[in-house]
Length: 99
Length: 207
Image 1 (cartoon, rainbow over the protein chains, first blue to last red):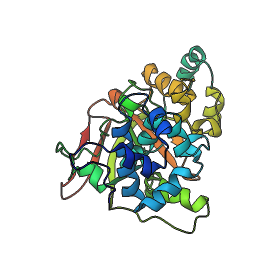
Image 2 (image 1 turned 180 degrees about the horizontal axis):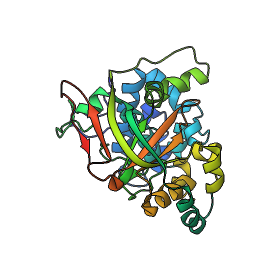
Image 3 (image 1 turned 90 degrees about the horizontal axis):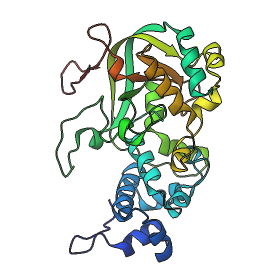
Image 4 (image 1 turned 180 degrees about the vertical axis):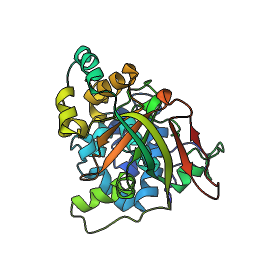
């Protein structure tokens, strides 16, 4: 069920990450402001598929305005280079952390 | 929300808070709770969130702030807090509803002394705040390095030393109430939070 976002050698595959999030190479670069964005995006993808059950529903959630993000969509937040905020939100939901 | 100095000066007038006892609720993803597939195995700590409020920040806890435990006051609120993905689909009128992965709904028995009740309009007036401000989105403010009013309130309430915790309105369930417990203010044996599990599969007590 989880998307395979790694190469055969075990490294995170930036092309697969870009495909999952429908990001251009430039947008992927922008989201990498902290140098660890690929790992963060892989974490987001895994948690999102865990919570939605599919890549299709994950993408709908990613592109839907979110009240907890001041009505920005999660993908807009990621494109701004703020993958941490989206990752934290998903982690809190999984933990049942009242937000 | 009042400024920090005003908050500090008005908080004593709100004490002592309520003495509360009973059960608090939380709904946590099964995999996250037990870490079955985690790279580094860990024992479940239902009352502790790895990388949680203290490190990342939470609604009333600035990053690096006081150790804090967030729970719902009832089952439906706890469930709503864990079901925000599906709720987002419902509110956007999508035809598809995502499935929910296995989730552990558990209770924690508690006794708390001097809980500030920030759900009360009279208390909110003294604090210079409102339901809307207490529920407002805070994650983007954090990112923009803008002041987060609820962080200032949480830190001021903790710093006052007067309260074990604070009741506040849930942002994710109409009329739902949550509690933030300031773990560092719990004094044995009068104040505690303890997971309720007669089979002792889940065990944790604070402090």
